Length: 118
Image (cartoon, rainbow, N blue to C red; front, side, top):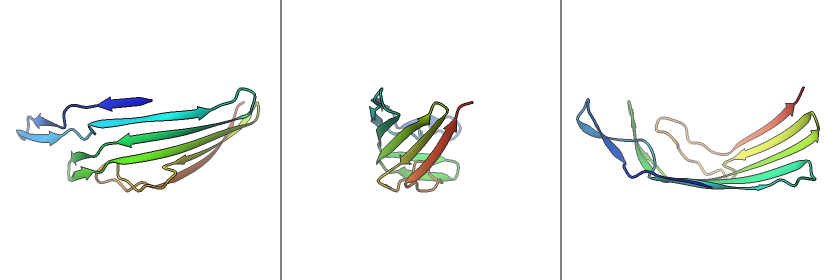
């Protein structure tokens, strides 16, 4: 489990002598639930992330980043001592959100990976 709190939302820019946003949320947090039996070749984890909305300003990009809540799911399977398979679903509920101004909206991302040990 993690949590961060930021007690400021802007700072005085010495060049422009105006207040600029710090490009970070006031509250951010999350947790992870993991199932990893010692006698089985597989494991699962569920991650949750919350990010408060905040103002964003960087170069020509400025505006509001809306708050979002995201669930990620991870599964690992050890095929043998030298080969493992992993499946990751980031943003498994496909909640479209923006993490930085000027960047794309993010939705579900599915990744499959094979890992070999030599």
